Length: 215
Image (tube, rainbow, N blue to C red; front, side, top):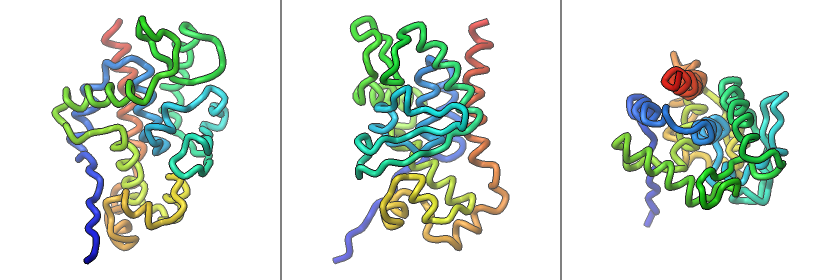
């Protein structure tokens, strides 16, 4: 009997904006983590394991080390200029917590001040935001699935998306995107060339809104 595979849930544009509305007042660390999770299609484990020396701000690239990946497959992926702005702001903030090289994302709680942010803590943060946005299905992997689907909508070749995602086969990639093939991707791509940049612009706006609210 054929095994049915359920597609991962991704938010609609309205649901995405509702999530961002809730996230706009989050600390800079949480906002840049959301941006990188989407922009570079990072898994939760990959995101939380990032180190300061994994970053190449000059070329806006991030190295995802093999030992942090699901299939022990290292890759280097880009991030957008808007995410770069958020990241630069967080790095300035991080320097006030610790100037030591090492884990990129640090806890700021009184009990674990300066310690690496744990997977559990990040999952708890995303869960809190999801509940506040009334999106109970939004989880740490949702941004990754949304990014891969958006790339397919823009007409990226399946093999390119697989490489970007760190998948060894395109069969794995197809499980994570809400398209049935390249023909459908081309059809959906019409009029959607800017969707990826639009989402990142919305994430970057969080920093502007937060700064204005604190003025």
